[in-house]
Image (cartoon, rainbow, N blue to C red):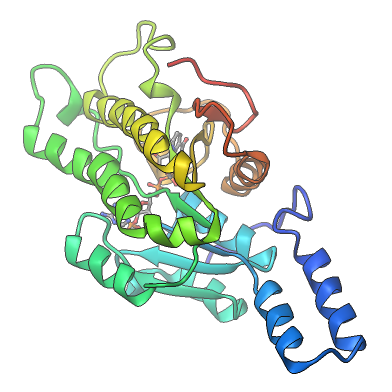
Length: 279
Ligand SMILES: NC(=O)c1ccc[n+]([C@@H]2O[C@H](COP(=O)([O-])OP(=O)(O)OC[C@H]3O[C@@H](n4cnc5c(N)ncnc54)[C@H](OP(=O)(O)O)[C@@H]3O)[C@@H](O)[C@H]2O)c1
């Protein structure tokens, strides 16, 4: 089993320390039972729900938030085969693995039912597929594969976010989608191929702007974050051979951006290094 390297970019993301201190003060003061109950409710760790945590960036996100003390709902489509994720769950009592194939409406409904009424501070729509190069090259475009790519990369994050919007609103939380620089018209240059992946991420960007317009008045921040070039199976399948971040570096960098984001941020796609990606 591959062990993830541990890296903590910034403490205090979830501000667990001040809340713990608050809890201590309350208990030392011997407050009434009602106050203690309120204190323990206040000190409950924040909850993050992440898609596609069996490997890659999703797995690194799961470990990063688990280390920070968050309550982590790490979803994946085949928990019985997610060895690295199951090892994390064995290590962290605050991390639970839940079944979610993001293309399955019944899975989304069951997940939403299980978490009905529970505040979710952060929803990270991470799962995506790239597809192969030949099936996305002109002359060989495979439209069934296009449909599948759109189902995973575009329809699913929207459907899941719609299903869990009340949970995130209850927490005054954030909904993140992981986008990509290949969605940018400006950065397109002479790059060829990858029609489906590019088009899916561009559609995701627009969907996220629409979602932001709807959810901002409800106190939910809707964010687009790009992880940079990250050494994962997805990147290797793209044929890229240049320098890349580790999954841990990328997840920690994105977590920092997410923590700093506010409701009033303009909702532009932000790269892991903090740069705004041009549309
Ligand atoms: N790596 C990069 O350089 C890079 C650059 C830009 C953007 N991104 C974005 O970053 C995110 C993570 O990518 P990655 O590089 O970590 O990719 P990855 O290593 O290929 O991991 C993709 C994850 O998505 C899951 N997944 C795929 N289809 C799913 C489905 N139907 N239901 C649930 N989970 C599903 C996979 O689960 P299985 O194990 O079950 O297949 C896996 O856990 C994606 O949104 C990707 O577009 C990555």
